[in-house]
Every structure is written in structure tokens, then in C-alpha cells.
Length: 145
Image (cartoon, rainbow, N blue to C red; front, side, top):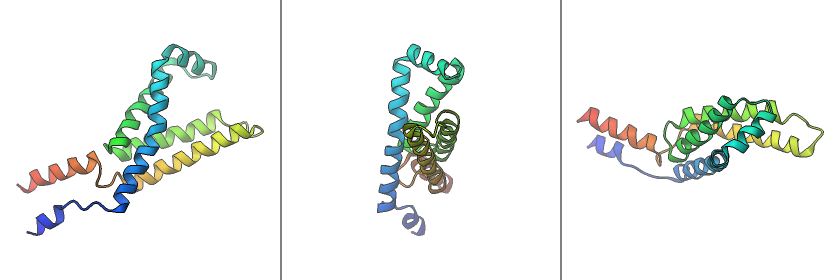
């Protein structure tokens, strides 16, 4: 009886907020990853002008798509959030440092803010409305049975 009570899924406002936040955070990376992958030659040329080699550019696109999907679905959420959080910090520090330009300063601050959201997601996890929780519940049920 106790196990049944503990395993009951009770969705609360925090879980809904985590789901909503995960989806919003992931949209940016999914849209950008799809755009870059759809125009790969142009993307590689543009990144080369910034000093980014083709293998790093392709890894960046894969990170945006893979980690973006992982966060949206709540699968390996903490790891995906760590990858994208570090990616945003590096992007801010390497590509948005011309603070004389208000636009560059704004991009720097946005990258820092997104990174902060990712680091908060590392601490909070994906919540109950996630594949992480579904997998955890499945394995817990199998271990008990």
C-alpha cells in the first residue's frame, strides 16, 4: 500500500512550470539547429568566417538539436542542460565581447541569462512530466517486482 501511494503521480504547478520552462528553453536551440542544418553549406561558411572549423560547427549543430530535444522531452535533462549552459557561456565570451555595440552587449547578456536558466535546470531536474521520470518510475517498478 505504501508503494502505491509513493508511486502515484501527482502533477503540481512546479512540474507544469518545469515542463513549460524546458520547452521554452529548448525552442531556441531547436530552431537554430534546424536552420543551420537546413543550410549547412552557408552555416559552415559563416562559422568559418568567425574562426569555427567545420567539425566544431557540425558538433555545435548536433549539440543544439540533440540537447534541445533532450531538454524538451526531459531525457537526460541535467546532462543536456550542462552542455547547453556551457555552450552559451562560451558563445557569450568568444563571440559577443564588443560591448561598445549595444546589440553585442544584449546578445552577451541573453547568452548569460540562457546559461543561468540551464544551470537552474541542472539543479531542478526535469520534473515529473518528463521521460527522465517515466524511465525512473519504470526501473523502480521493475526493481520492486
